[in-house]
Image 1 (tube, rainbow, N blue to C red):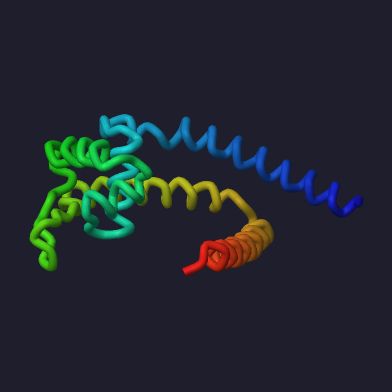
Image 2: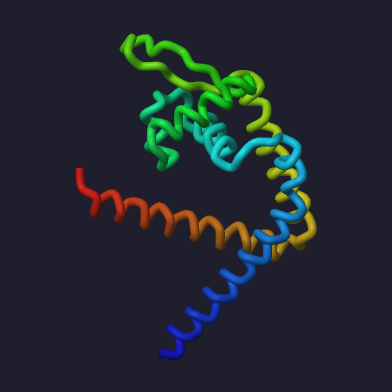
Length: 158
């Protein structure tokens, strides 16, 4: 029972620390986002397209968890801004694919770069022992996340 209580206490400490870090990150790292004048859904769309590559409007709507009409509106506004483009699918003339433009890719890369730089500045403040322990812990957490994903894939079935 004591081990379960200690595990619960440590998990709560980690959650509290994560929440505090997130609040600080929002305050310190949101400045670049505010200058973009993009909605959260538009930023999410850019991120998804950067990760997945060109998608159909239907595929994008599914990933975003929105309806086709909502996805179409998001895409329309990003097209007007020159951040995404619609192209014909080479395998199916009925389908239009959505992909990042060079400007859209640049924005995603700038945001990712700013995030990496911020994280590196924070990590540079830690001593070598702490960095080593953190690296070990994150590698173990990643392995646990992979196990969880495999279990969910098996539970979902083919």
